[in-house]
Image (cartoon, helix red, strand yellow):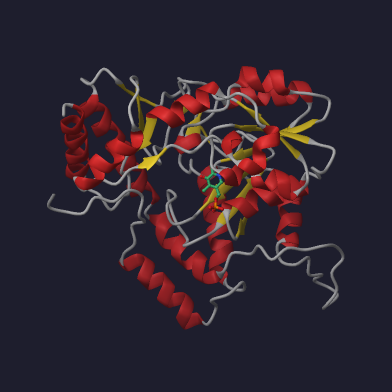
Length: 366
Ligand SMILES: *Cc1c(COP(=O)(O)O)cnc(C)c1O
């Protein structure tokens, strides 16, 4: 193969260098500096939501959302079986009980019917995950939340730019949580964001993540704080990346179209399906195989031909420390067993993606 194919590496260039230099030149590299609030405003504007607060990671964002909602030891929080462990760990950080439910086999997202079945008188919140950038059915989830008086914390860490019914993911629930880790739609090196239309709650989180420092009484902390602030140097990177968000989203959409077009004549390959109302951001395009296949062998064969891939997330109920919350999640297990994530880094060009698809065809046809 002529050129390296990238799985999910970030696309960085001159603009990123320029803003990073601006941050260094200004002397503001840490948690004081103008870029952080500029980034918060840009994200809030883009999403169409009232308030935003930047934090250290997507994980920290989910933690702060649950903490601010007062979720604690007596409470149950409903989470999907097919996600990254970072969705569920914050439930344990606040000493609540995760209740794992299976996913819908077509969209790979949490199944609203199974959410309903899992509700008890201890249920306090639902954390829907817009998996791989594919929006959950937020109409049904918000209806359930309303009916049973539950909080909704959207794990939108993979879905910046995705929409449901014309509205961005992350703005439906009480909080939306975003990640700017190295492999996400845009990156700050490592960072996250909480958004909400509840300005009071966002302002309180802004205070909490800055060690709960009292503005009027230096050295005084009125409650337990956290050091979860984003730094100005991370935010410098973010300002460059957000200027390029449209370019990245266009590319990822095109990559997904190419995969679908090039692989459509292979009947045994299926893609993650969207609900009618959605606009997926195609953070990562994934496929599943109908017939039983050894994923490790397939990955190795592709790797030998220069194509990096990754397994679908291992269902969280397979993790030993989550074992006691385990339930049967046959759909999540099926997607994990039969699926694979394809190269979607925006460092790739359309012709690279075509080559990936062609190579997959060749390997399958043996
Ligand atoms: C990336 C990710 C997170 C955590 O984000 P970090 O910024 O890495 O802490 C949480 N949930 C899901 C589904 C993710 O993919």
